[in-house]
Image 1 (cartoon, rainbow, N blue to C red):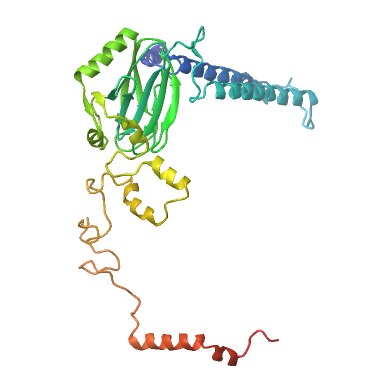
Image 2 (cartoon, rainbow, N blue to C red):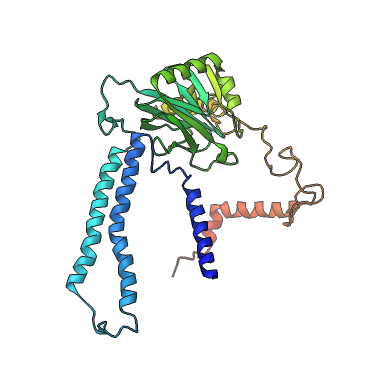
Length: 394
């Protein structure tokens, strides 16, 4: 009487698990953008092609284990069998055909879905025409937030992105600190954003909605909160969104950007109604700070053969990694060299209580120094070399 109850309990548990999983949003397999949909199709096709080999192998493994069991005396026993041409042809031809098919599909998809390649279609039934004006968006990854520049509208936002449906989007991406990965699963595949470099991504959103965007490359303490919302809206809705940003936003200049790029976690959405000219270009070339040299200027100097002795003055202008110097409480070396007190009262090995280093090697006295000087003068005298016996004579 206990078995049906136990079976029923397990069944209920399985049904509850399945019910809970039904709430999961498999956005990668159900995207809202044409590029992501093509990537989804590539995943499905590749999986099906591989299952053509995997499923028969799993089935035959179970079948052989059952058919050639010890108790089955009807199964043919041939301990001297070692080769079958027909079986070898089947074993090698089927995987070879799958590999050729996967290679061809991968080759075509790699070029067709290249993130740098401009879109040639809005969806499977609508191509991109010449009169379609794309939306340009410049993306900057900060610690730990995203900044989006709209150069055609003169606005910028933090942790909020919007685009009209069925309009090609041209992303240009960079980073002001460490490498990150820009990823909107419903829109397209991820693309890296790296300091001093610019990457590109072309995509389109085909359905209205609010989608999640994130960083898919670990970048430090606030990485898990480096998320934003992507709004796919109609053209009218996008125009209203731009008007709201201009109405409620502030000014984004270099000073404001330098404050914004300081590491923060869970940064709220911010709007900027105006953006200083060429600010994104300055971020890309790592010359937002006043007095710093842009990378493109440095590369021009290198291309012209260098600046000679005059380049010594450029050293301070090329220090791009000390923006937060003196502002971040990081562990330092030794006291008093760094100006920070040591974290432990125990002196370091080889140091006394005052922090001075103790040398195990005895210091040479004046007599030893005079002796070494005399030996050096003797070795440098040509007359001594002539009088010395030769070790090369045999």
